[in-house]
Image (cartoon, rainbow, N blue to C red; front, top):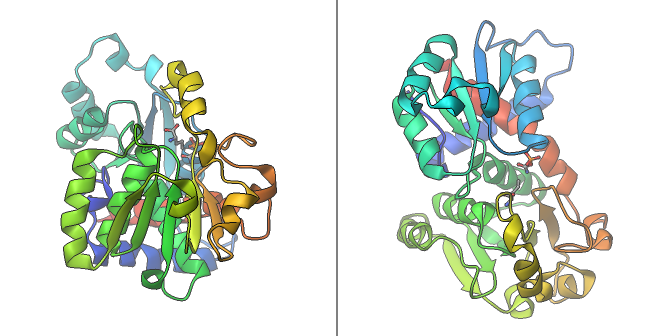
Length: 305
Ligand code: CP
Ligand code: NVA
């Protein structure tokens, strides 16, 4: 039984197998009778807000012939003190898989360890694996060779940055994280990823100057400066990130015509300008669309096996 808590839960061959399945799924006509998850039910526990993750998993299960149950954490006995391990055992009786979006990453790991069905991390404070697997797939659709491009992540060293580091390390990509010195990605993730790049021929660099950092970028990716749960730090963070806005002047510093990416939701006029977000190089809505296709392939891979 396999879960997706961290991109490192998947070997490179498994990621490539999922990506091949995505290409097949994208070719299916809407009127197909493809229903590999008929009779299967996915539980979706959310402690944080979501538009894309919630809806794409729910619609994805429906399109694969299965059913998704949205479980607001506030309505579960877990919220009233039922232990995580008892909750996991009981949920595993009824469900064939669980998606969880929560604050504590340890909670996702504990749930995956206690459950008898696959657990998928729908975002924790530390990681967002489904997003970055989708992003890598989306880039692959737009470039000739993933291994020959430079991907620049600009902004906060947050859950998205951490999963980018995992993804780049596992897939052997060239990734630059460009963030203020006080907002670094997770130290251990970086350390383990750098060991992994030795095996996969990837390259992970840290920059603190946005103008230097974007030089030579084939892709520039950004995310919100204030992640869910960090609302109290908003004023301080917005000040610290002022020079990190993805605007057309900064895009020009790449010296190229880079693809523009953002996991969404975006705060237009903060971390990215509307001009860049809506510009011809933006593949931001393709990313959002691909969340559905990639997660369908992940669901099929984990729930069928
Ligand atoms: N990108 C992403 O995970 O979006 P949601 O927060 O809307 O799910
Ligand atoms: N870093 C953001 C990602 C949202 C999809 C957050 O955690 O709020």
